[in-house]
Amino acid sequence: MTLSPTPRSTIQRGKKRGVTDRAALERVLDAGLICHLAFVTPDGHPVVVPTGYGHEDGTLYVHGSTGAASLRAGAGAEVCVNVTLLDGVIYSRAVFHHSVNYRSATIHGAARPVTDPDAKLNALRVITEHIAPGSWDQARGPSPQEFAKTAVLALDLHEAAVKIRSGGPGEEPEDLTPDRIGASWAGVLPLVRTWGTPEPCEHLPPEVGVPDYVSSRTRQDGPQ
Amino acid sequence: MTLSPTPRSTIQRGKKRGVTDRAALERVLDAGLICHLAFVTPDGHPVVVPTGYGHEDGTLYVHGSTGAASLRAGAGAEVCVNVTLLDGVIYSRAVFHHSVNYRSATIHGAARPVTDPDAKLNALRVITEHIAPGSWDQARGPSPQEFAKTAVLALDLHEAAVKIRSGGPGEEPEDLTPDRIGASWAGVLPLVRTWGTPEPCEHLPPEVGVPDYVSSRTRQDGPQ
Image (cartoon, rainbow over all chains, first blue to last red; front, side, top):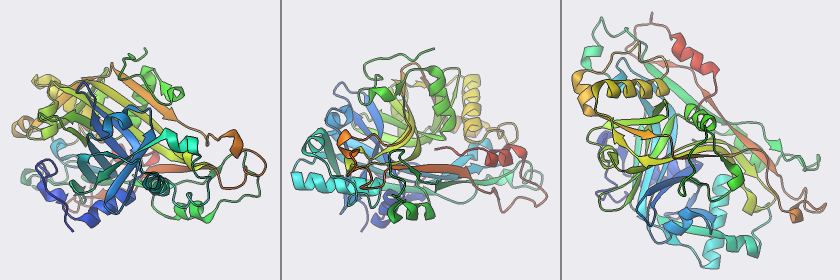
């Protein structure tokens, strides 16, 4: 399935870096941990906030306090969401071609408040399992008060674009001549993300070991 | 110097996490590698794009192609910029208190196009040195064509807020009773960023070693 290219989701710059395929979008969303959610305030100002998310069946979910400006302004309104993973810094022979390697997904659309209790509980499960896989079945579920204090927004993954840059520096022919080719270092400095050693809560009884759903994560790549 | 608290830069949620101090803002900006820049399109839609940045003397600089929608829409208009560093995932005994540790800076203001040639060249130096410290004096500077193709925006760091979460899970008293305190794992899974081994460009003559301004970075913490 390909993503819908509309004028605002069509990649204007660096077209060769665009990827219009649902699987690529889901790979970026799976790899990221938080997203950046942008909305317009009632008086017309742009605001961007970092927030957790999850996705399931072609829908992105974000949540927050019912009092949060982003959740109030975003409900029913147009939003834009970006998830970016940085993979390294590109050193070029020209400052103009310095860059970064990255995987980036941008989604546009109207955010729908999720108010049906079953759908909202499912969305909270999806978000929790994205941030902390395995936690939903272990930790205490939301109390009625906690559930009421939490607002959830849903966004279709229909209008989306994925942009990826990988590989070494792109150079001008003039910088690859014999006298210029070794004039300054050029290459990639990779950025590596890993999970550290789990740090138990000070109140946790010592006999409670680190469960596999946490420790297994430390054997995987970290997110963004 | 404290940051100016205005209604939109005043932290509405999690007030205890707000930090109104210029040094804290600069520490977050120094630690991050890219920012998320939000603006409103001429037809009123929010857009957020990830982009490189740099800062100097109380001014944040971003750059891009003169053809980029973000640079065109942002010139002279209100923008919002966020830089977030993720430090770990919080596992709580309650799904409601699952969270992340982070350092986050948000800046609001009108973005000024930087067109004076000296000021623009300096801004490009600041941005390049943020992404790749040490490169500006080694790599080829922008040609007149490259310089003309690059647009730079400047944003005062005056209206800004820093929000930081660190430490273990916040729990409800009901989850710290003897029968609940060890019912599920609770603690922090730290997220660690490091730089990998520099990968030289395939065209680089083998006698060109990795310079200290690159290799020294691998002995420091990585960014976001």
